Every structure is written in structure tokens, then in C-alpha cells.
Length: 442
Image 1: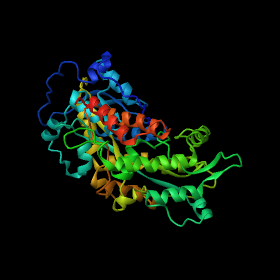
Image 2: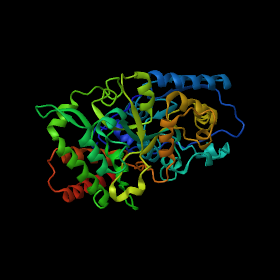
Image 3: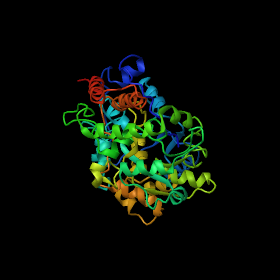
Image 4: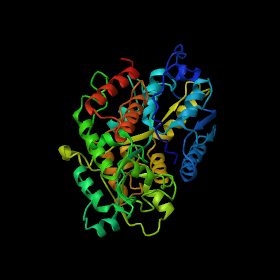
């Protein structure tokens, strides 16, 4: 699967034609109309998604099932299309009829600008019962009263650990708190006579694989936004506590030595993944890693999964984690929105379709009925992620009209922080609040 890294760049709005449209600086889209009940959809639609290889094949199988059930609709599938391509195409008045995004972060912008159509009229007309979609998932598929997307599948983030390394170090169970994580990381780390890292118990650098501010925030239950929609990064003490822990572990290894060590890592999605190669003993990752490990079949890797460790002061959060999902919507440029809606409804509200997609892609299904289905393929390891997804204290990043700007700004700050360039943490977080609030527009 394509997992797109954050650029760390806080983009300025309204600088290019594409940005003008994406940021909502153009006139409002035309009034949305839908057909009367009972109208049969027909014609051709174009479907863009970001998946490739094995996962794209799994999607195609379900698309083929749709084509058998609705032969009057032809679906042209284009895989490997990321959010940037889709955003630019829609801004230019082109793009797909149906778009699949890899992240919930796009929902705030797409709903508020009308880049994706509000699905509420279709849901109401067809009497679609949303109660089968968990409340948390319903929240991240809508923004400011507009439900411009439906959930495709979800991701839950957990903690992978090398069982053999644990046994060799005399560690009997995965860590539950960050202090335990630090202690275990030091026991598991091996260095050469020159002081360079050979094996890292845990790589704490933000920007390494799935070590993003969004995923780190879940370790501390750290809040992103206040009730009035402003940045909470500077005012929530959980952020400062979390960043102090992270910097102490970075300093234990040495920032430059960690960067030098990381230069030896393979691509995250490849068989040369650092965890799969035994270069790191513990790692934050999503449920899809289970399928990747099975496909890559790394030699001598004995591994387990558990929930991510949490701040010691918030030990009651253990078992929760970061959850997010893929979202799907009808583009405002769709020439056949009725067929596009029929296609989305089949993929997202049909239990059998969702189960088959979850089994094929090895992601978490987003329907309660699918989670309970006897046809859902699961095992002891995958169940860890299902439990994280269902945990009442699991969290996701809130939708924002600014898109990912608040996360990108935080990523920039963490880069400066972990390198030692930020000396005043409270002052730095206060400036970060100001930067984020400017991006939000307040």
C-alpha cells in the first residue's frame, strides 16, 4: 500500500489555481440535485484509489462483484492515485467520479469547499441506516454538518516487538508505559565498539516510518484542538510531557547517531523494513504490517503485537491507540453522480463487500456487522488491532478546514525539537499554537 509521509511543510493557501479551488477561494459549487427514489443508475464512472499491487487486486475483485450486480454501470479503475493528484484534478474541473483518500485528514477541506459532494441527500433518500457505522467513524467522515464521505476501511496502530530479542534480554512482556518502553529500549539496544548503533531497541525520531505527531499524540491522549477550534498543543500539558520523554530517549542514542543508523534502513513498505530486518526491536505500525510480514517472510523473525505504551500518568489509557481510515466520496465534477453513489453505497454499506475488502487488504472493517461477521478472517495478532479500534479511548486526528496544516506545523516543530534547536519548550509550543491558529484562520 502507498503510505504517504507528511511533507512537514505548512502550505500557504490561495497561491495557485489548484490551491484557490482547494482552499475554497472560488465561488460556491453548483447546487446539488439528486434523482427521485427508484431511479436505476447506469453509465460509466471513473474510480481513483491509492492502493497498488496485492491491495489493488483485492479492490478489483470487489469492483468486479459490483459490475456483476450492476451491469448497467461500467467502472473504470485507476490505482496508485494519491490525494495530491486527486486534489489537483478536482481543482482543474476534472478528476474521478469517485475518489478514495488514504486519510481522514482530507475530510475537513473537501467537505467545507464542496470538492466532494454532500452525501446526506442520497443517504436520506435511500434510507441508509448509519447505526452500523461506529460513532467514532461517523465523526471523521463528516465536517461542519456535511457528510461528504463514507468510510472505506480503517487502520489501527499498535506496537510490534521482536520476541527473540525480548527473550535474549530477559524481557517477559511488551511495555505498557513509556518509562517501561525506555527501559526496554536500552536493554535491547546494541552498539559497536565505535559507539555506532547496530540494533535500536526503539527509534524515537519523529519522521521515522510511522512515528508522526498524530501517532505520538495517542500515546499521551494529547489534544489537538480546543472546544472553540483553536490549537491546544501549547496548553495541553500532555504534549510537553510526551515531548520531554521523546527527547530524553533521542539524547540517549544521540541525534546524529540515530540519523546515521536510519540511513541504513530500507523502505518502510519493502522487505528491507527495519523491523523485519531486525534493526529495531520495537516499532509503532498499523495492522497492515501483519500482511506485509506474511508476504515478505523475513528469515528468523519471531514477533508479536500489543497496544502502544502510554504516558505513565495516563496508564488507564493502555489498550487504546491511534485509529484512522480511508474515506471515499463523490467528486463535485462527477458527470454521473447517481452511478457514483450506487458504487460507493455497495462498497461501504454492504457487509459482505466490507468483509471481503478487509480480508483482502488486511485492514480493519468499518461496519459493526462486518467486525462481528463469521466470514471476517482474523487471528490472535489481528484481534489486537480490532480491540484497539473498538477501545473507547482510542483517538484520531480531528478534521479541520486547514486540512493537515496543524499536523504539518507540529511535524516541523518536532524536527527542530529533537535535533536540539529548540531550547525553550513552553515558548516553542506557544509559538506553534500561533502558527497553527494562523493556518486555521484565527
